[in-house]
Amino acid sequence: MPADGQTDEEWTRVKTKSRRRQVPRKVPAATTKKAAPDAAPSTLTVADIEAEYETFRLRWQDGEASRRLKETIESNVASGKAVRKAVCLGIGTFDPDHGGWDAKRRTYIQLVAFLDMVKHISESSKDPIPCIFQEPLFSDSDKAFIESLGHSVVESPKAFEAVDEHTLLFAVHMYRPIYEKALEKALPAAFVGTGWNTWDDVGSLKEGEFACMREMHESHRLLPFPQDGSHTTFSSTCLYWAPRAEVSVSENAQGQSVEEKAGEASKTRAASDTIEKSETGKAEKSAPVSEKAAEPSPSETLPS
Image (cartoon, rainbow, N blue to C red):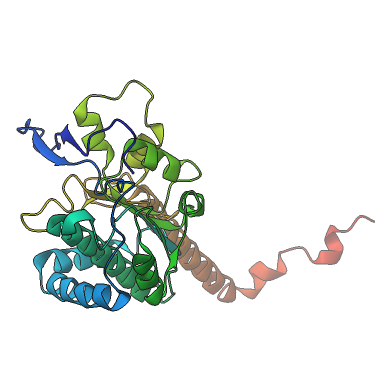
């Protein structure tokens, strides 16, 4: 969540593959605001939230972003590190102050995208993936709705502590201290949020700072996260996915990993050994009796 004294938005620049410098654009640095002490309590019921959620979910499923996200998951889940739990941080409240439509829409779309990812990964692994949510702005109705979907809502810092090497960490537009807390214990199997390229491009980091994000950038595969049309819901957002232990991050020109090549070489050697043994066996069976008789018997090799 935003730290005291920090603004809700910051200037960032996104690096592109062409390495051509882009014009700086303003993107959300965090998706939620701290509620004012005298903020009115939520007027939405669980049924209200559920109805709005279904509307946004159907719109998302009919969109290009949903299709591209599914393709990304299906293309990488087999070679990516196994995900056994999912943690979602700071998506915001479903009933923001003053009924802000943009903030409400952002919360719903991020929720739908997160649960979509979990569904696609779970379908591929054939195992259920428990989901944990942490959002200080959740109202009682918000919490009840999330729990009605079969998920858990926890208070800080329990979600941070739940992150391990088999976690999908979904944390879009969080401040750096939030990422550092979430990544302190372990680097997750998969991460959705603001990646190293964006932080590094801002130019505010000193040598050695944000080492956990840099380490993840170097050890995980960097994949594009589909954009939400003209909205900034997922601006400056990427997907990091750690490769499985037997798959290397570094690949050769043919897109083949070092381990894959080594595995193929091992199979080739094994096949060669099998053929050689087979040929030797055939030769022994067809050898003349006189040759076999010339070989010493076991008793001849024993000491007298």
